[in-house]
Image (cartoon, rainbow, N blue to C red):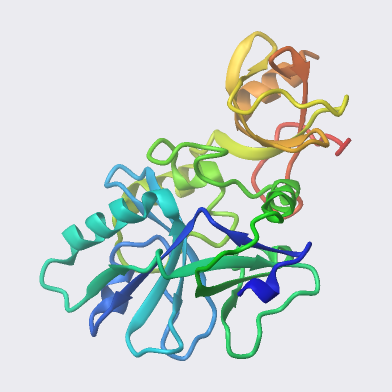
Length: 293
């Protein structure tokens, strides 16, 4: 995998790889995840999440069929959550004919973008969230160069893609709040899954007033990650990832942003003005169309 690393590729050392194998693997995963898993004749990956019964995101993840083995699905998920995900999936297994294994000590994930493509024999897939994010490749974990991870995160931030642990806390947000409904992470035409009733209610009643959105600091100097965002004088969310160029992501209450903008009040973080804007790919309602400074 090391031959893939360049300015348009990065080994993601904070990602884990799980394998769910067995005759019941497809049915088992479809009962749990927010998106339909790829069918037997599909080489694509799905973007999905595992939720609590209350509809909160335990983890988002990518899932694909392993082309090297029958009845095996590979899960690309946050490394820090891998042990807990194995435990949770095992608890849900009951009598299903599946085995759940953590291969994170052996396998890792590399992101490719720009003109980079997976090699013909690689276990790779197009990022199902946005074509501009390129590809992801699962391969052997080794002494990888992680120096390009900054470029990877700058790209996802510029595109408005949140990441758990950086832009929101796992277990504290609903799928709509991190835009899974906009990024192909929710299937509204599949059977029941854990947390589905809450997701469906939010979708049909339009209850998602909080959203992760890109922000720009016009002066080029970003506030500290994690700091509270104010809409006028009211708390409106928290700042997530930021780049050296004054761009970032924030989980915001859009109704409070709208009220402040209507009154001509600033949106600030740590006393520094910021401008939230709607991602190009988003179709949710946004308070005021604001320029990308």
